[in-house]
Structures are given as structure tokens and as C-alpha cells.
Image (cartoon, rainbow, N blue to C red; front, side, top):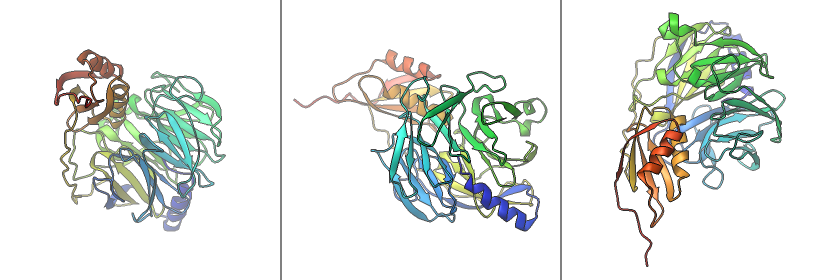
Length: 406
């Protein structure tokens, strides 16, 4: 997600240039795998504030990192005391930063310097409850809109976290959602929703009336215009819509009316089977920031009139061998989306006796770390994976369960 302030930056720069925007060009890439400043472990959400600084939800490091528009590390906040799995962020006009915690089923609010202000939410299906909040956006009045992933709805709150209303339900019709992941607002205040598993973008009024639907009809006629799990969306100051079309592994540029303008695919991908880029934000100086979750980096794109040719330069991504450490390995079929992976971890992590669960999307596996002296049956694991919507293809012990010392 992004902020309303990002629209102002891009509107000013486009007006000054007077040029038609027709494509993307890669100008920089930040980050590498790790837990130090400027390093990431599965970055997800990105937001831009009024000064042009970026906030990145660094999900597995359980923190938010702050950068300048040129990628200089400025600060970090959060940690294990604040987050379980932060996946998106949005900045309000007053500078308040809202962060979705996918695993904790909460939204947390912070000052620009990282001071905790408030938080709300708990697991459930009622008003103000969440089942994995995946995306967040703030309108001009300060109302907070949250994409409630497994509840297949958008919930709306006032700036203090008081519930106002819900929009949508599970389905494939107009105004219905199938695992929504991201949100933004256009210059007219309309709500743009990345309806990821309906493979489309929906434009709605703030109260939920559908205005337009883009994407699903294109599958029949223009294959390059068909979305496949569009998980991130951003609207710039000129009204252009930027889509992180994650399963197609590209960024798509649409005009204000949803007309296809361009696409761009990154090079240097070390994990071709993982859906990425996942998120996108529009910033100052006609820059667009794409979050390449699979490769632990932020890709900086420049808007221009050079056409829709993908940048040919390789951005080197160091291969990082992940150490397997745990008690049980689960091989899972059909898993490629980070949101689904986090859902599987959530279900497995709630099993009695499981201390932690970690999914490796590239390998299609989950590693369970058991509590000392505890065991988990294969049947329990299978059912938990099925509850998350997937099938466990193989289960095996990789180390004896640890026992309590006498």
C-alpha cells in the first residue's frame, strides 16, 4: 500500500514534464537477504510518506524499515514485541503509519518515528475482527480500510480503530471478493481493490458500490492483459494504476480508465516458482517501488515514454541456502503465493505441540519445530494444511522430537 501524499509528488512531476507515460525502466534495486539494516526476509508492504520516505513491512524480520527515496536506511521499528508478521503499511495525511499484522490479526498504528500509538483487532469473523488482514489504505478523511483476506471483505475504521462498516463478501460477482490483498484510492476518492484470486481489480465508491471491474474479461481476448493473482495496487497522481501481477511475475501499467499501457518483468529472479513482485507504491520523481518478496529486494522503476520493453540488465540476487532445522518436514502441493504460505504457517503454528512453522515457498515445504517432549500426528498436520486450502503431499520426520532434560 501507499499513501495519499504520494499522489501529490507524481502529479507535480508529470505536470512539469508534460510527457505521456508509456512504460517502465529499472533504475535501482535495494536490499539483500538478511536481518541487518537494509536487509530483508520476505519484504511485503510498502508505503510512501509526504516527505518521500519509504516504509517497508519486512515480514519475517518482524519489523518495519524506513528508507529515503534513494534507498538510504533511516530507521527500523517493531520487532518481536510489536509484530508477528507485518505484511502491509499505509501512511495517513497526518503522518500516522498503519501496519497490518497478518498472523496476529491486528492493525497497529505508529508515529513517523516508530512510537506505538494504538492497535486493534482479534481473530474472528465479527465486526472489527480479522482473519489475516492483508492490505491497508487510508482515505483523505483518515478512515482506515483493511483487506480482510480469509473473511473476503473490506473493513472500514475511523482513525482510532473504531469499526464503521464492512464491504463485500466471498464470491465472484460484482462487489464480491476472493481473497483481497491490497487497496488504494484514486484522485476522486474511489476505492481500488486488488481482488487477487478473482484475478481482477475492482473500483468501488467508498461505501462499496461497484463502478468498474478490470482484468477478468481480458482473459478471453488478450492473454497479455489477463491478471493472475494481482496482489498489489497503487494509483499515481496522474491517475495511472500500477499493478503487481504476482503470478505473472510482472508489473502492469494501466491508464485511468483501466486501459492497458505497458508491462515490465524483472530479471535476476532466483525463485521463478514463487509469485512476485507482490506489492507496489507510487512515489516522487515519477518513481514506482515494486516489492520483490521472493528475492528480498525493492525494485525502483522510473516512468517514461520509452515503451514497454523490459530492462535487460541483470540485477544479481545472491543465492542464500536456507538451513533446515526442525523436527518435521511437510511437502505441500500447489503453493506459490506468500499470502497462502503465511496462512499455512498460521494453521500449522496453532497445532498443540508446535512451537513454530516455517514455509519455504521455493522448495514447496514447511518445517515444524516442536516443543520439547511434544509430538504431532501426521493426521493433525494433514488436516491443518487442508484447512488452509492445500494438500500435504509428503510428511516425514527430519529429527527426533526434543525431550525435556530430567
